[in-house]
Every structure is written in structure tokens, then in C-alpha cells.
Length: 375
Image (cartoon, rainbow, N blue to C red; front, side, top):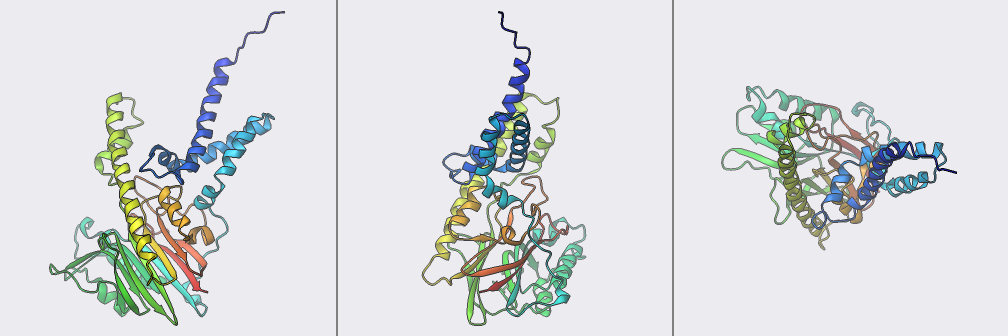
């Protein structure tokens, strides 16, 4: 008897190819958190695509399960392998933070971190108006955090950008690096606090634009807060135009190759710099005179499915978003990445009661806040 010709060979191949790519992509997403991208870089790219890969893997699992195919076990294994990455990306258990008017329980501390993009100083048509600056300061006074960590902070004498006096009137009597530079301006990272600062400075081999820290006296306890702004990919207008042109059928192969190569070089350089910066911070945090209770917060310029994030996890830091967050916690509104790159992490017996990513549009980043209690 003659065998029937395979009429669906091409169709089966077209279905199998994307399924295989999704499965391999999920395996590489798992490896992205465990392989240093300075050694092997390409898994980091699949870490960036993790939300889409996980969704594709989940749909393929359901599809193969409905057809009673053994292939569903492969996709189930890939999904279970990335369960930790899913937890770090999506949360549903958090509850809304109480309003400041409702008051706080004794021992509760509210911390906020915010990349303010220089309070929009260089993007404002009339800097003396300081509209964005005033809106940010009004938002902070409304939320009443006890500790504020600014990234891309800017202050100058005159020109309507006197930040310190406004915050000190609001009760923030203590801050890192309180003096303006000789040129009459201050920029970088800065910490304001209602609690006394018993020690402050920047991490060795890093500038105040990269990392500052403050040891806060809270009752009989000492809490060290690191305020970080790690290296960005430095994508510019040319990169934005390239991304926008990807869907255009008019571009030739050389255009795609040149644009992709340019962006990949920037990403590799930024990864190398972030790794070195984090190693410096952890070395400082693990010095003999460092207090046990520590917080790392700020703009890490990397998403949760990354070697940067998992390195901090391996060093014992816990993510406030994972403990009490909701949704995907998107904190950056720029070209790339479009999801969570700002964090509040802690170790040393700190309990997170609430966490919030505020949907306000004063900067290209959203502010994060957490109400914590030192146990």
C-alpha cells in the first residue's frame, strides 16, 4: 500500500520553528541571570525579551496540551525553569499604600527613590519658571517620605532652582553633600532625610553621579542607604530613529546591520561598566564597619531578568517590589528598556509593608516608594 503524501510538511515546519525559538529563548532567559554578559553576551538579549517569550511559551503549552502532544511537557519545563523570573517581573499580591493623611504606625519609615532628570532644567523653555521642579517638590511634600533618594539631581544658586531650602522647610534637615560646588551648582545623586546622618560619602572609584551612601540614626539602629545611578546604554536620537525604522520596508540590510551593531556595542560597554560599579558597591557594603541593615535603591539601568539584578539577589538583597508590588512595575518611559529598571532592595532584617510605583509624568522615570519597618 502506498504511503499518503505529507500535505502539511511545510505547515508543520512553520509551526515548529517559532515554537523551538520560544523554548530556546526561555532557556536563554534563565541563563541570562546566571552567565556574566561580559563573558557571553547574547543570553542578556533574551532576558530583555522575557515577558514576550514567557507569554509565547505559555500559549504554546496550552496549545500542545489541548492537542495532547508530549511537546507540552517541554514548554511546561521551560516555564517552570523561569518561575523565579516571572515573580521578579509580575506581581499581583501587593496592596495600595495608605494615604499620608491616614498616618503611619510607630516604627514605620517611608522611603522614596526618584530619577528627576535634573528637574527638567535643560528641557524647560523658561528655566526660571521651574514648573517641573515645583511639581516634583509639591508631589514629595504631598507624599511625605522620611527618606528621599534623588538620581540626576540638579540645584543651582538663583535661576529658580534652590531645592535645599524648600526641602529643609518641609522637614528634611539632613542631606548628603550639602554644599554647592564652587561654580554655584550641584548635580549627581543626593539623599535627604528626616533622620540624622552620622556618616555619608561616595563609594570608592565612583563619582557622586554614580553612588552615594548615608548612615542614618533611627532610634538605636543604624540604617545604611545606598543611592545608585548605574551606567546607562546611552541610546541617542540616532538609535531612536533606527528602532523606528525597523518596520520600514524601504531600509536595506546594511542599514539594519549598522544600527544593530551600534546599539549592541553600547549595551556591551554599559554591562561591563555596571558590573564593575556593583562590585565596588558590594565591596563597600561588606566592609567591617558597615551596618547590618542596608538598602540599595535607585536607577540600576537594567531590568529584573538580568545578571545585574541576580547579582544583588545572590548577595542577600530582597526586592521590595517582589514582596509588596503590583503589576509589572514599569518605572521608565523611554525608548529602552520600557519596563522596570528602578528598584528598592534591602537586607539585614527590614520588613516591607507597602510598595508603590507612582504613575506621574514629571520625569522620564517614575518615583518608587516603600513603607518599611526595621525588625
